[in-house]
Image 1 (cartoon, one colour):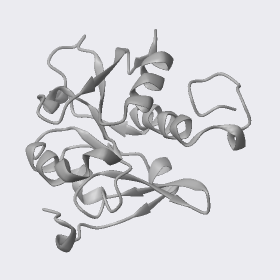
Image 2 (image 1 turned 90 degrees about the horizontal axis):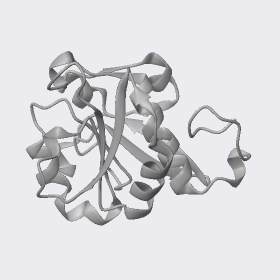
Image 3 (image 1 turned 90 degrees about the vertical axis):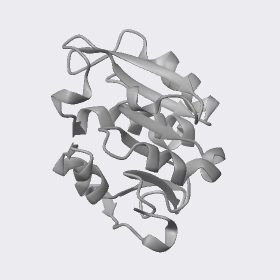
Image 4 (image 1 turned 120 degrees about the horizontal axis):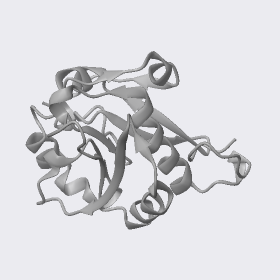
Length: 174
């Protein structure tokens, strides 16, 4: 069964790293709860934003057509680091954004944006979910403290498949 959408697809062993990450990003929307205040109106779209990872943004855009999250239309948007990222519900920072990482995380303080990245050490630096490749497999690190501080509730199912990490001030965490 594919991790992208609900349709049967290729054997997971043949999926690219980008396809696996895209599948995870979509599934995060199913296993994280946002407070009602994260949405401007009852019909506001669920926004997945991508900064610095064009192939992932393209794949998410292609596979999101007609999809919904919690009854809300799913919208995928490529953004720049200086855009207003508070409109996002899930923000994916590509590896190219490492120099902007701490500034971006600081700008999101107090908002209910699930921050996700493939940047090395992202979750210990204050991000919420970091992708880590170990033994040729994509694994997850979750900083529950950061998620709780943002008012997000992470499902025990997502926690069970992840490694829990704490903020490490030496990595720039807040």
